[in-house]
Image (tube, rainbow, N blue to C red; front, side):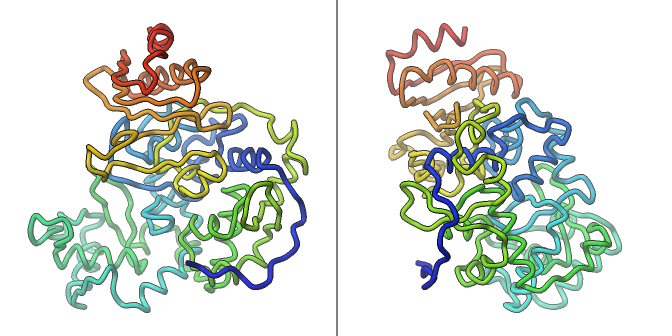
Length: 400
């Protein structure tokens, strides 16, 4: 467990738990009118990181994130925002994430750390194999690991070939970048060719990288504890503590939070010191959230702010699941009020398992299901299991 710093600055403000919740929602683009002209690219810029995952239910998680904020957004605009040339890059942040290309220099500290270690995830590879990958990309242009010579030695997931090890090491070191996904396969290219020249050559110090990343994490979170800030880009405690004083974030005390917190001063100024009507003004989204959405990816923070204990159960044995394989939290009115485990069968969206905190949220559930169905091209919605079956008549009437 990370150690708490010995000395903490005095809080500049004391804010209510509701104010903190609204700060978090607004910072995450889920309170207020969305900037539709900026589209998925604007969402990526605001969040600073969008997590990638192989699971695809309604859609892949990186598509669900802009959908949650913008509503029906097409796959092509999302792909262009993430993998349009010179728009973004993939790297290790909170996890494997898409990051705005402007942040390329800010991850120099992590690229240097990987280089200093000399290996990635324990895999060893010869200098000759590494050089061969770089030479092939230079000669032939962007390629998948298959195009480079094959990804695996055997069918085992982690039994990577030398080529795959080499190109993933080159990705970690910053010699290559991912320029797009084809059938969920990474397409690699030389960083010197794919990253804009004005960004590729910039190498800020570790301290400069960390100060800027902490400031951006604070802006994306609105208000956060030390643990929250560390988790956003998976920083170490010592890294965060060194960067916090220069980050521009201000210490605050949040009602009901046991740990000290820091807030984005621009967010505080925009919502007012009390978080009253100004803090709550704007449109609340009613939507289903990916379990990998940055609003809820930090489970202790989700429980602290929204009172929901949420765990992804995709890797839990089926008989031990409580809420379902890919249970998506239901957001409405700025609160998490239920869960839906969705699936698709042809042109039918199937809610395999549904739970709600109270009957008053049935209309919001119906709205979220109808919108999600329309987005993925389904004409019908079928609810298989309701935790409270007494809600079925009203829900089916609204869905009908």
